Amino acid sequence: MSSFLKDIFLESTQKLILAINTGYIVANKKYAHIFFDLDNTLWDFEANSIETFRDLFIKYDLENRGIDSFDKFMQVYHKHNSLLWEFYRQGKIVKEVLNIRRFSMALDEFGIEDHLLSSNMAGDYVEQSPTKTQLFPDAFAILDYLSSKYSLHIITNGFEEVQFRKLSYSGLRKYFSGIITSEEAGAKKPDTRIFDYALAFCNATVPESLMIGDDEDIDILGAINVGMDSILVDYSGKLNNSKATHLITSLQELYDIL
Image (cartoon, helix red, strand yellow):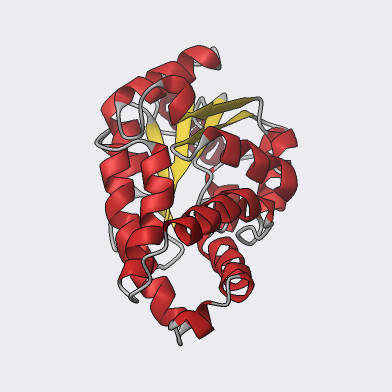
């Protein structure tokens, strides 16, 4: 090798070492713990919910009760469910109210005032929906990959008894050493208290932790507020930017980041 090439090689090596030491190269960074959201990040909430509702629509013969369109019923239900979930996140209602009221309010719009029906549908939904097993593409593959390199955990706002059943029925439970629910932590995302609780529970620190979720205002904002890096999974592909450290449109893209 000529002295000229040796000088170039030496200079390049020195720049590489300097970049690593000063933090400009952070591939795989220093993460040891990865916290996942569950619903709509790994577990396909929308697909599993629709499957459950189709079962209930048939079981309770809603078409002959005056609801001639399954899609219309779902549209009305989602309207009330979203509103009530926001109240629940804000601590304005308890889960028992949320669970039944979302059904009674939806049925009311179709002229069905039947508390027993609302209660039965609510109970069946909570019982049956966690048994559905549709996940987002590459969920198992990416978890196999990540679990060999990092400690994986769940942070979820979902009902505790429901979320644990989802993890068990879907086959996801084995990947996670820490499963933190808002009920257990006493706070809901994006409240920093649930992140602080999760970090303490998992014996993790902020610099070595990463949050992966699908909701900018809940998962990502919560992580930012506690100082944690984050990845937003936008399956719709409609977002052009995010406050997250990384923005991806599929779980497969995690291979390039982690």
